[in-house]
Image (cartoon, rainbow, N blue to C red; front, side):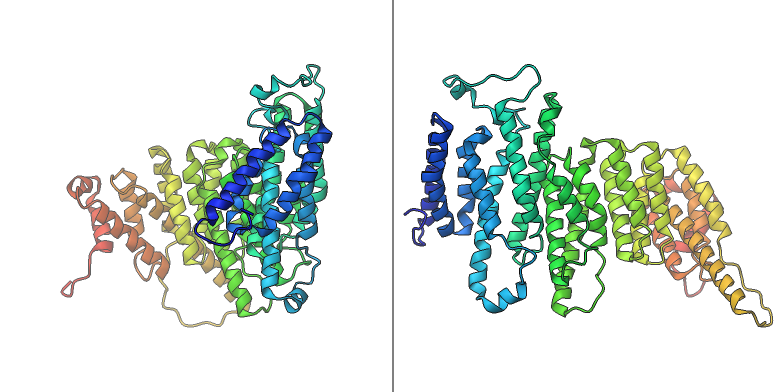
Length: 555
């Protein structure tokens, strides 16, 4: 009666009270049952029939109360204590969850929209409840506490003690069997529904997939920590199949355009769960890094003729992936793994930095800036050199957005370099910048040249322009990295940059960046300029003034 109470100002309290009563009663009944048969009979005749009725009637907004009640009712119980609940929840998902083979368009035309919404809402309820059961199959926190009763009740009940010969206890065997049951009956159904038409169901599916990967990995690591390798092999890892399916979404031909967008959205939610809900020790290495290429590739608009409405949905997906890429790059989670994880990420960035789609190259530059800033004290010398190489390779990009983002990334990378290393770097790129200046065109009579010679000349000019842009932007990044002091190499860099501020010597994009950097340097050093100018020679000061001074009418 409390669950099905009519809407009123007291409905929330009544619903929460019903959940609290259910949690307390179910825990007492299960805990004080003497035999497994008695316990199973309680589930089958009392608790599960109540849930069958209550969950259907309950508003979705109050489902969290029963989520907590279920967790409390089975918390720290051996798997055999709530095996009927596990099988019941898996069966509910199996029988109700939408599947990829379903003709979605036919459903929309034959059924009412409200009926579909109600059905999808019920699917979301079952998906939410099964997560409560999966969480309680997690046992790493207390190294096996889930396989034992709490100490204050275990002393009153005679139980088999732990095996000291390295063999599995009965509870540990049951735990492995429970995970095998979940993997055999649930994994395929969830993966076949990642393109679900209902967004809330997709979120629940992604959360459920994460719970399976997360809790199963903790289950495996617990047995390894206890020195029991045979227990860790008692069930297959669902993460293997999950990663295989999610990684292949974009290249798969089995989805329609709209369903592929939905499936990619589910993958994005899965990555978000790994970043925000996981402990980062295993999720980052096992799930986030392998899906990082998919996250970058999802920024690219898919080809094909589709409706403006579908393009709008795709634009929302791209926006979501931009957010998740930013989350991954700025989260200090790789420090919990091994150093090789950083190298794996840099290898992904190296691949994405040469992608044909410029938005992906821009995103890789932004990612490098944030990731290097969050983990710079963990980088090895080899990883520092690799990040520097990626940033410099992006400086010569023909898209202004990419080169600007790469300059910002390089500025952060160079802040940790020593004075001697920066002096050497500046000297190297000053020589490259001077050699890449545009040469003055000589006045010669026009001559006829072949198409091959014209093409070679254009390629040579493009190479020179790219080399000039790279070298100039490296010097700009060095200058921007010293906003409040003036080391000896800064005046040399500014003098070299001033040569690229004239129309005859550089392209418009290079000239604009040079003028912006010189003006910014002068602005940040204005307060103590008299002390800073002592670091400049007269020629260097004149070169800087040529760039930052405003032309006068009478000059």
